[in-house]
Image 1 (cartoon, rainbow, N blue to C red):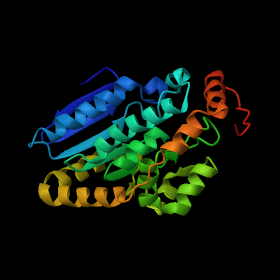
Image 2: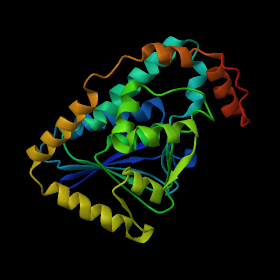
Image 3: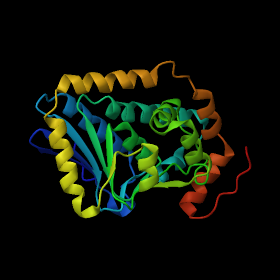
Image 4: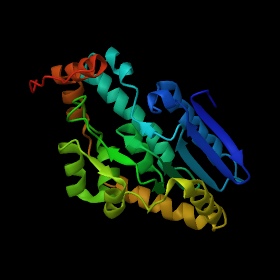
Length: 258
């Protein structure tokens, strides 16, 4: 379950996941996503674990999304549907973890990285943190209904639209104001503050925390629409293929709306 690029460690009642591709700003490979799912399974299978901390290695990024090179093999809208369903399964597994989860964020939490952070129960970050889903400027893909619902539940529809349509980034202070993070912590105090929070979480009533987490998760999923047709439309488009090519080629994409 542990790989060189996703590390799972244990510190008493606290489990820790480290995204460990610092040279790629911890962009997620398929193997890393699978290891994350397995790590959540391991956490839920051990009643002595009382909290889970997620963090990116290197200090420059939490997770900078999915590794874009993996999209070069996509050919049809069905590929996009399969991908988004896979992401919903994995990110949803993190969201459904039995224990409280804390994302400790330095630098960028972008795209899939923001989705992973949003699936955690609490988020703390350093002042240099940046949060965004710049897909309207980069790849030309879209989010699943589940991912949209999770984001809207955190920051509201207006801010979610602002973030995605303008392809902009929230600063740490903007994220704090929007309710996306609980605290902004100076780098020299980040480890100490994260340890304080998880120690507090590890000492709380486990069933109270689980019931609260699960109730809110079910509320977010209530009446969730099927948006597969929209996912297929976008991922099967010429624009998405152009977005992937342009990203890999390090140039600006030329959108056609087809």
